Length: 155
Image (cartoon, rainbow, N blue to C red; front, side, top):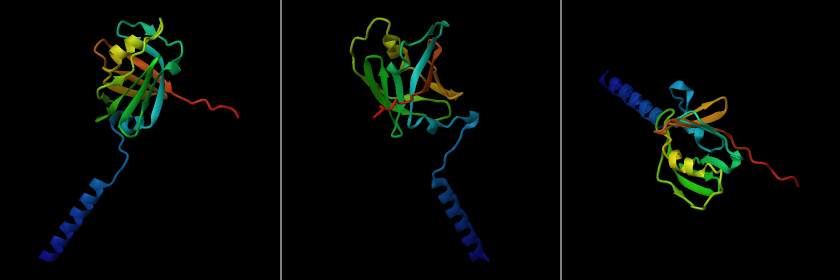
């Protein structure tokens, strides 16, 4: 009898260990899954500032962000490029590492300076109706982005 109890306990322990090490896609409360950003690319539609001013880029494809599956993030901010690391440890939470970027002078009317100043302070995200919303900056406001589609050349 004692031997059977030990066998059952060992079997339960093995099942517990196996299930703890199995990879599965977990969806968090609120329907957001941190892995949903991995491998995605987005372009800016608008920047809504904390004082309710709406800024719209002349060309959203000049303001893009790509979340790599490897934990790297790359971005185009008008005439400059930037890269960092990213992670989403909890639902709707977003953390960036230190950013490296080029420092070309962008033309008048560019949203570059504002995005570079505030963008690194983004702390949260949500996806609604297929759009990515980045927020959490101290000054308030948010960025609204849509999926980036790549135009293929005709042959």
